[in-house]
Length: 195
Image: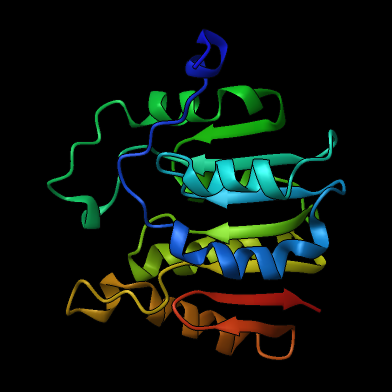
């Protein structure tokens, strides 16, 4: 391995993403290679971000915006998160010019973004239902008509209190916004297309 390649070799300690790749390939194929604007709420080590860069956001004019505190959430209790942001930066170093980041709470970061701007938004930050609902409500106006909104961990149930899991928030959002989207996929992840 040359030193140039080794310099950019990504390091991922946890893999919550790879099992979703076939679904992402199928749904996001329409965007591959064309100019696209994406937003990720919660990037952790950058595994899904890197996959997007390598497989979808390959056009020179494509950009990915992200929002993350890099501090984790209650579900990360007991995990070693020191160095998470530098690890994300290293894993995405070769794509730095196509990334726009906000280090902080999504509630603050999302309100600074333009409306009807993004082709794809991925919500995978805090799993607490109030946070997921806030992320969805604040993201919806940022999504272009025809754009895709993906919720991760819809069926995740590590906590017995439903207020500590995404499903309650996703269901509330879908109920309130009924008639403004078409369901593309509903399983462990939920994907909708804005009308």
